[in-house]
Structures are given as C-alpha cells and as structure tokens.
Length: 415
Image 1 (cartoon, rainbow, N blue to C red):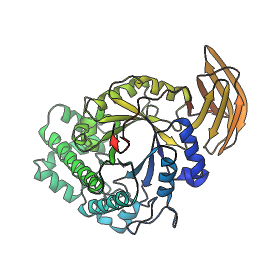
Image 2: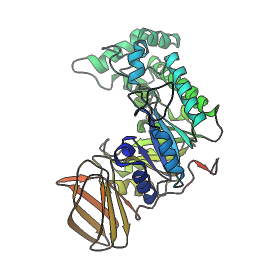
Image 3: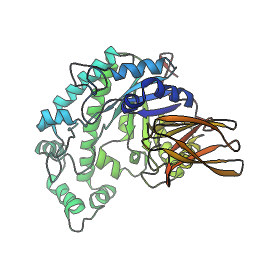
C-alpha cells in the first residue's frame, strides 16, 4: 500500500485530473482526503456544515477521480479541532490550564460537539461512496489543556486528588524554571493520582473515538475506520502519550481497523531507526499498520527513501502513507528517462541523481505547478531536487518499491 494525505488545496490549485493522474502514476493505492479541517468547513456539501468552496463538491470530485483510477478514498477528519464550532459554541472550547478557552480547539468531552460530529460523519458516510473514514485529532493536544471546572470534576470523580496533580502541573509548566519532567516522572514512579489522571483522559478519548467510529459503522458495512496517531504512543514508556494525549494504542486497537502513526522523522530530529521503532511498536497491537512518513518541508529524497527502506520488511506493516501530496515532488524514473512533477510554490532549479555508485548534479528548471521530462546521465535510483540552496522532498516512483497491498478494503472486503 502507498497512501497519501491530501489537502483539498491540491485539486483546487492544480486540478483534480492532474493531481490524481500523478498519484496513479506514482502507484498510490489510498488517498486520505481532508474532508473537514481545522477551520470547521467541509469538502462536501451538507446542511450541517459550511463548504470550503461554496457550491463545489470537492469530496465527490476526489472520490470519482480516485475510483476511476483504481484507488481507494478515505474521508479525513480533524476530529477535535473546529474553529467555526468553537466560535458559535464558546463553552465547547478546550480549557487551557492558565489561559482558559484560548484557541479553536473543541473539548472531546463536550457532549453536544460529539453529537454534532456523529451527525456529520453519518451524513457523509450515508451519501458518499467512501472506502474509509480517517479520524485525526482523536486526542487531547497537550496536558496543559483539559482543565475546566467540569474537566477537574470529572477527574476527581475518578479518584484523582486534584490539589496534588495541580501542584505537579505547576511544577512542570508554571515554575521558574519549570521542572519539565515532574508530572511525567511521577507517572513513571507509580503516583496513583497521576496514573488515574491519565486513565481519565484516556477514557475521554475512547468515548469520543467510540462515538465517532460507531456513527460511521452504523451507516455502512465495510468502511475502513482508521486513526492518525501521535508516534509517542508506540513507545514502551507511555508517560508522555497517556498524559499529554490520552491516546493509548491499546485502547484504540479495539475500535479501529487501521493505525497510521505519524512517524515524521525530521520533525522529531530522528532517523530511520526511529521510524522502524514506531512501526514495530504500532504493529504489535494487532491493528493493520500504515506508517505515516515525512514527505514535506525538511525531508529530502534521501531521507524519505531511508525511512521507507527501514520498514520495508517489517512484519505487520501493510504500507506507508506520505504526508503529504502537494508538499512532495514526484519523480518518475524509467531507465534513463525521468519526469519531475512539481506541485510546490517554488521552482526546482537543480537535480542530483544517484545510483550504481554514481552521483551527478544537473541544472534544470521546473516551474511551480508544472512537470518536465528529460534524460538522466545514467539510470538513477534516487532523485534529489533543489530550489536554489534548499533541498526539497522527493518521492522517486519506479525505485521506491511499496509494501504488500491490502491494508483496507479489496473488492468491498478487508484483505
């Protein structure tokens, strides 16, 4: 499987046909199409939500383009961030420990918002021929959030000594200088109040995820329900993930058909060994694993290739998903012939070709939103691209061998 996360911006700027033709040529099997983003607008037309582009059904365009090329289409929802809903329902906002409801983040424990999301998901699943629904942000975004009076009362009802954990919160986040590991070390040392706090936050996440996934499955059989997960939950040390996010892989394995851990190596200043560690930690939960890889600013053709190679033969790993289409240059290689598709807002000015112990730079220019074909000096395995001095992220199709297909539905059933 080779997946891509895709923003609607891709087809709005470059055209639906051009975007999906490039994906098809690259061997993409699954597109995770942003259907409801942080702003709260949607890529489909509904009476429940305002459209990203009034009068235009971007989701239907994407589904038809994907299915016409043999690809699966998953509707991707940033589940617990909704600036529009928060503005209309201020009381739904997630509560910062110091600043109160300060951002467009909705509390996953807000019952009215959960019902709203269930209605939206039921609506899109019922009316569109989706292969999957992909849930992102099914978590708390940070331990500093989730501290309204109602939140604290809920934690206290589950046995948490609020005064004690607030002392640890103050030491961790508010002291001068802060003791950045105070509450996490308390978790690791077996502090029962901190452990109960983490468990309470985990229950909130599970309840939210269960409500959303159930809304999808109630409408249609065979739809793949997947989750984008923070990579820390794949580690043996769960202090960070359980407390910050309440997102526990074991909990969610009972609710999801597939996990997509966001193993963005360059964002974490990590290498391919770390990507392998995240992949192994995810797949041990028995859920189909598609590893999210760093394919945007900061990544390169070489780092992306190394990340793919690191997990190529990992048991339980069904494939990879690139974040994201529109941020990665497509390089199509066939012998000494190469075609570069540049979706970026900056031109490609130089390429470097590597393979068979040879390496050569070639000056060229591929303007934003265009493609160009040319002869390479030799048959290359990896293409690296630059805009001036800046190296760009490149996926070299034809040499990046993808993993075994079948992470999601094949012919209406799970493979």
